[in-house]
View 1 (cartoon, rainbow, N blue to C red):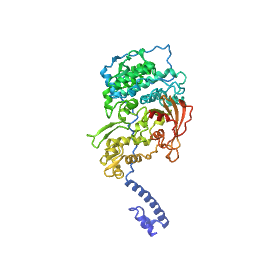
View 2 (cartoon, helix red, strand yellow):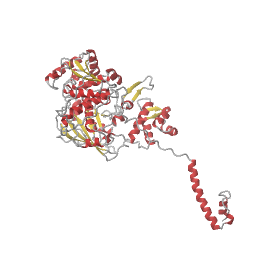
View 3 (cartoon, rainbow, N blue to C red):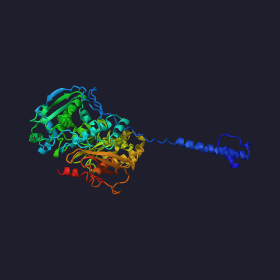
View 4 (cartoon, rainbow, N blue to C red):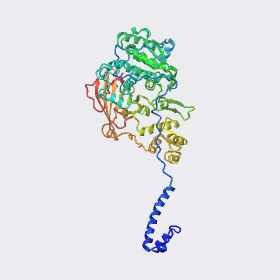
Length: 594
C-alpha cells in the first residue's frame, strides 16, 4: 500500500487525495494512471520522432505527350486514317487532285540528293537494287496487307512503312475499345484482306506514307516527287515501266552505272504543297502508278529528304558525310530512324550523349530525343544489342503501338501484337527511363558513370527530396563517382519498384505476336511468335537463345521469355517451325551470304 501511495502522489501535483482512499481504491487508481502514462508516453515519443518521409511518387516520365510541330501551320493537320473496310464507290465524285507548285529539280540538286543517298561512288549493284523496286502488296493469301519486297536492299524502308500500315490497320480507327475491337476482328490473320478491303489498300498505304512525311517535315512545306532514270523522264507517267521487266532492268542498270561514275543518272520532278492532306492525296493517286513502278520506293525516300531539307538531314547525323544507303544497298540507321521518327539521327538510345570528358571539346552523338519527337509510333529492336554493339533505348522498346521493326546486320522485318497494352511501360520501366535520361544529362562518358557532385541535381530532377541526399551519398558514391547500374537500382527502390532485370515480367504470362517479312525470295510470309514470360533464365531450362539471334533480340525487350515461332500464311506456311527458330531464319543466313 505504501508503494502504491508513493506512486499516486508522484503522478501529479495534487492529482488526488489518497489519504481518504482504501487500499483497494488506491490500487485501482494506480492501475488507471499506469495505463494513461503508457498511452501518453507512446504518443509523446511518436510526436518527438520525425514523421517518416513518404516514398516519392514518380512524376510522369517525359513520354506520352503528343508530338508538337511549332513551325507548322496550325491548320495543317494529318487527316484521319481511312477505315480499312471503306470502299470507294465508282460513282463517287473524285476530289480534285491538288497540283501545288510543280517543279523540275535542277541537275545540281539532283546530284546532291544522289550523293546524300548513295555516297560519292557506290557500287553499281548497290544502286541498282533501288532503281527497280516499288510499293506493291503481297499476292499471297493471308498476307494481302503486307508489302512485297522483290529485291534485297530497301528493307529498311519497307519494314517501317509496313509498320505504319499495320498501325493504321489495327489501331488507326480509334482508341480504347474501338481499336481493340478492330484488332480482335482480324484474329489469327491480321494481314488478310477481309471483305472489300482490297479496294482500301491504296488509301491506307497513302496515309502511312503521309504520316511519315508529316513527321519528317519541320514546317508546312511538303514535297511529293517522282524519280525516274535519266532516259525515262519522270513527268511522263505513261512511260512508267513495270517493275522487274527487261526494260525496267535495263533502265536501272544504265542509271546505276551513271550514279557509280559520279553523275546523277536520275531526273526528279514533282509538286510542292503546303498541306499534308494535299500530299496524302497526291500519294494516293500515285499508289497504282509511279509509286508501284521501278523507282517508287526511291521516289518516296527522296520526297522525305526534300520535305525535311537535305541540309537538315545532314545536321541530324553524327557524321554528315555518311550515305543513307551502304554496302549491298542496305539502309543505314540514319535512314531507318528517318522513316520511324522523322529524324536521321545515328543512334537508337534515348536522347543525346557526349563522347569525351568535357562537353566543350567532346563529340555529341544523337539518338531518339523524347522531348522533341515524343513517343515513337513504331518501335525498334536490334539484333546487334545482344551482341553488345549498341543498346536500344526505352522509347524505341516501348512505342505508342505494339509494333517493332527488327533490325539485323543485313535485313529488317516487322513484329507486332494485336493488343495495345503489350507496348505499355511498366512502373519499373517508367522509373528507369526517367532515371536514365537524368543520368545521361550528367554523365561523364556514354552514360555509365557520373561525378558525385551531380548527385543532388539528379535527385532533384527525379523528384526526390534533399533529405535523401546523405543516404544516397553513402549508398552510391564510390571514389567520387556514381555508376549507372547502382543509380538505377537505388532509384527503383526509392519508388517502391523491384530493381531486378525481369521485374516487370509476370511469370507464366503468354503474349502473342506476328512476324512479317515481305522479302522475295523466298516470298512474303507471316508467322506467329508466342512468348511465355518467365523469371528463370531460359538457358538454365534448356530453352535459351544461344545461337538464336531472333530469340536473343526479343530477350532485350522481354527478358527470359521462352520463344516459339509457327507459320501462318505466305511463303513457307506449309512447313512447321518449332522452338529455336533456326529453320525460320535460314533465309536470314541466305541473305547474309549475298
